[in-house]
Length: 343
Image 1 (cartoon, rainbow, N blue to C red):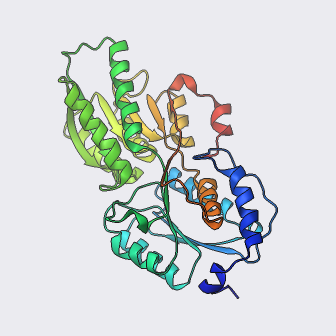
Image 2 (cartoon, rainbow, N blue to C red):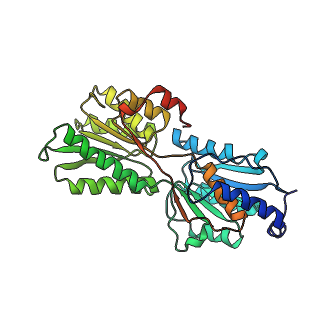
Image 3 (cartoon, rainbow, N blue to C red):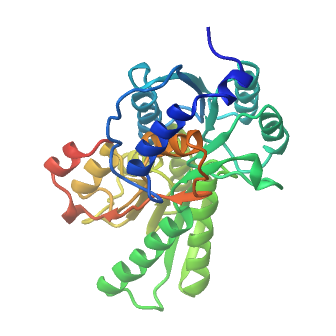
């Protein structure tokens, strides 16, 4: 039978000391490496409730699997998992259920940034620490969550825009030549969509010859992105650039381009930029179908565990932990490199 909250709050000093020792080895700010296997000293398991956005992309599946592989019974955890199916209401319900179940920690990847104040206040009142993963939350009181870990989506967007600027210069595109951009957006209101969109808009504003042909809602899914890109192409509007806000959106765009008989990628007419760098996207990039892959690392399980160990040891983790990331062009990639990656 799981301990009550009052019992959990009176855990022995020995257990805290053991966790503090392992946390010191695991975390000095943000880390990328896998966590070392510590000798198990827990007197009871830690129950972690995790609410995931959904399973709409390879990135999201990799994020989920990272949590499942980290929070195992062998390592002293019980993981309660909820698939929100991309609906904020489902996540709010899941968080409330976790509070009722008196879990030790709540972890969630929010669908959108706004609308979390009330339910996170409930978690705080119940003394259940909340860790936010991937997308951010906008709340009036930042003490409502213990820590956030994820990507700098604005920096990802800047990387893409700066790359496009260099690429056009290398290809001899003069500043006077019009560059039309079809922008396939992700879930509106999500941190990834906001950061990547704002940087593209800023890039267009800084280049008088760049213009956004259209902004269409890809919703971070392949099917929707295929649908909206196909509609644009059917109108006879062929962009110079397609800026997709994740890999599966790019794959949907490639399908629409192929069916319309429009070349793309390194040897094609349409430049394709995307984010995530999951295996399917990287393979398409290696094959020259995608020009740029900006990495967005989904392997947050070990990082969340490091935060939990700090909290268990009575320490205060960094409020915001940004993951280091890179980008890939076709010439950077090999089958061996892609196969060796974890996602």
